[in-house]
Length: 353
Image (cartoon, rainbow, N blue to C red; front, top):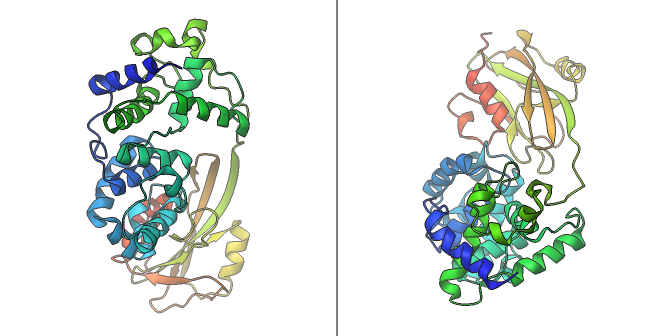
């Protein structure tokens, strides 16, 4: 790839790219890092509100580092992929403890921090410090694979490494303080708005005449990635235990696995296991509610809530290793809750014992 590729993208982005997103037009590493983590596998439209609320609550990396884990998870609740939030908190603590509250200025050092991989590190280093280093997220892979008609299977690490080497050679070489941030944004914008996975708008692409996939007439053939994750299905039962004073019993999920570290209604493999658990409890009512579906990236979850009424001073049976408590209506909305559980509690019925 020639330097004309980079020059065209830089010029295109200035006039036609996305320039009004709240994390753009800044070289504050905290703001850029936060946006990059939030945007991983999440749409821009979803991130906008979360980004604003998060910065309002944690204005600096020091504020985030000093926060309680539950407060961070509560602000993240609904964004999904909760390991991102846990790593975000750990990363902020490391930036403060190991780097004096300042993000490292190179992609190499940034990758030593929790939750920052090569592409995220490159984005921060490029946007904030004008380092000549390439990102390779999904949008960038698609753009480069099409321009080059790169037909090697990107499911294989060696082929992705080869494309990354090409991406680094394509970077601007002059006036890096201005061109690197603009180029990095440009190649992301091109993939997100024009060189889309389906029905790319080739007729308005700034590098159409350089694109070998367009010349072949089959841009959607690229990139090639044969390995696909199979969708799985989980069918789980939820114990919605509610006292007569409106308090709901919530338990903290294990750090690993789905909804790690969040508070949640107790989860059981099936209704029989849930009912067996309830056999040791004194309860005033029980009602099986309609099951509902919750869709994750590679999993469909069918959740069946069982609404159980308890007296005002009811104690739940203790389970080894499980941390749980009763939360009154004014308390649980402030917790980090999985999106489907929050929605269920927000809209569901109230038990009167």
